[in-house]
Length: 209
Image 1 (spheres, rainbow, N blue to C red):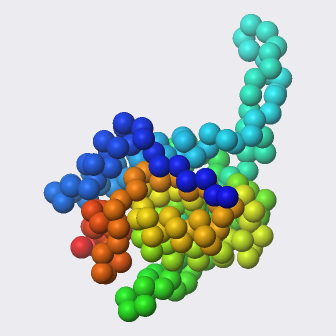
Image 2 (cartoon, helix red, strand yellow):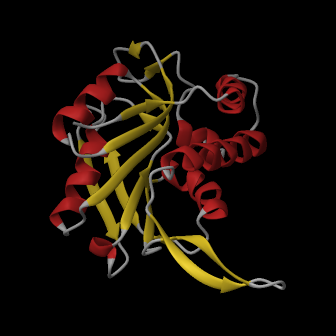
């Protein structure tokens, strides 16, 4: 069964409170989204496997821990997911980055794919799918299914704010994918926006509102 981790770290909660504010400008919003992604990434990578490696320090030889395999991929769901990539890369600079483009049909609220470009060896990598908002869960469910169809097996999902409906949809559709969530909000409104949420994350990251 999927593990759902709701972050309780004071720094994460403080920064989420800041980006919720209506008067937080584009520059600060974008920067803070990146910082939150970095902090959630710290928690999401806690269970990565380690292996022993012998190295030489300036004093002597010793055994240290190193990430086993070290093959990771960050897959943002376009376009808002792009705002989380830099923060993730600051923690895992060797990770490769793929992109999945989905948009939500304004009438049906169902996800429609328009772009998919993944690392050639994505199926061999530990994959972190990122999107700031998990609302209905439709886009995240579809993106993860696309990855599974391409052979990916080790998949994690990270978001900053989630609605209960999105968490339920994700855990039902993909019970093998762990969720790392900055904050769990109250509900979705009639337009499928998260309440209290922060508005449209893509518009606020890129200043397109």
